Picture 1 (cartoon, rainbow, N blue to C red):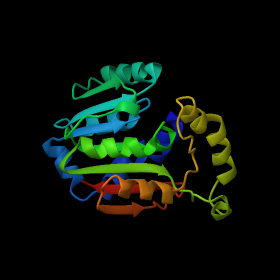
Picture 2: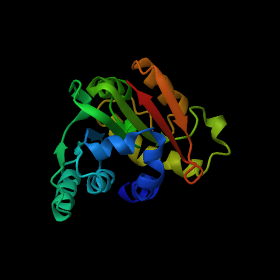
Picture 3: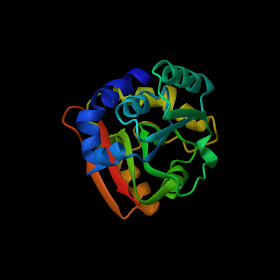
Picture 4: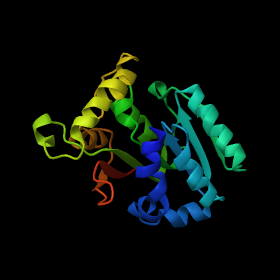
Length: 212
């Protein structure tokens, strides 16, 4: 999962990902508070924290081994504006704490994806922005006949993403839950202004920019 994220997110985070949100790079330069929910090994935050030393970054993930790896990598990089915590996001409820929140291929794995999106909106300060990257397949099987690598993504869903959610008693929506499902959940969470992007370099993913 970390290797896949490195290719689709980390390797292009400066040139492509940051450009999806107008004015974000300037805000990060000045100094803002940033959360990555479901951060995994933290490679995306490490890249951001290294580039933007005036901003403050925190990553949450359920896996203790992953967080230990991320904290070790942050220490090795000498980053004092970054920390990682073990956190079960199923009961996440911080209010108006962050200017910018990200999730990279993480929401569909959750016990209750809708509840998480609602809580992440609540964690945003006024004028905050949520950047959500997920798999860009459609919700209906028949609409994915020409989607790149669809058979592999359904297989990954069965062996990883669905078990992660079902193991917590969750919805088990899986990798191919569909961009339509994600968009509907963002709207249900109260995000009034949504932008949907598909990058030509990575057609497997969809990127939503949601403004509080």
